Length: 329
Image 1 (cartoon, rainbow, N blue to C red):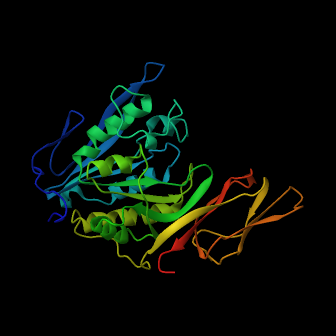
Image 2 (cartoon, one colour; image 1 turned 90 degrees about the horizontal axis):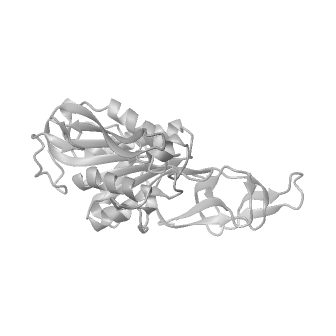
Image 3 (cartoon, one colour; image 1 turned 90 degrees about the vertical axis):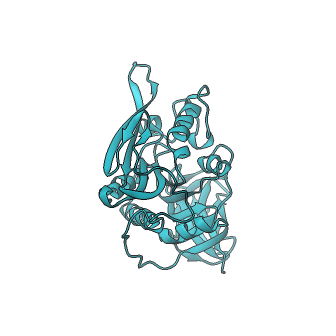
């Protein structure tokens, strides 16, 4: 019942050990892996739930809140776990709803040392706080898996159209990305220090789901994320059923760019997520509080809006609208 492209040789019917805790077939096991002590002497731990199936299959992880203020993924994982019957699961599913516990508590993208966790992989047991968290996540979760789904939102007051990012040249990733059912697929190269780059070096494919904005629940993005995750797990043959996909086939992005502010002022957005725009079409206007001396932000090419700022106060050079060119157009 396992995916032919994934390693199903691991002893799924044997107890599965993680964080010095044993998970038995047919059961859900909650685990907390200590991360570090706070100045108050209180321990912070990495929360994990392991769903150990009753049939052979791959080992897959779900992760969210690598950036501590990106909350949609936390709720996506909760709702996904609610809908899975572990007695009918093939393989092992490792769910980590809050990776950056420090940022999550402080409602911040970063860790207390102002480091970006997604630029700190694969980490180090003796490095910075961010490097230590990255090391624990890699060693305890990622390296035990054959595939992962990492859940994100936009950053810095920006919102994203639901999209999947990953290596679309990998036929395994492309099949799973298409199954997710988002409006657009983006082939993106990895960045040094990112989770995807650390996984690439280990030959572990991963998809990144981006949707919504920080510090907000977006119900539509969450619903799509839950259904998309379940469809991917069904594609891996971990589930015997999946939500029906009545959405249009996703469109692939060939390239994208941020339209930036040519002056500072108050930005009044004139387009929405998913909207198709034409070259030189006005996307919004920057002016002062009275609307004087308006300056338009215009599209550099025909494309689709996949992200935009929600903060109307902008400085010269700020990112305003993320515009993507569709590959078939």
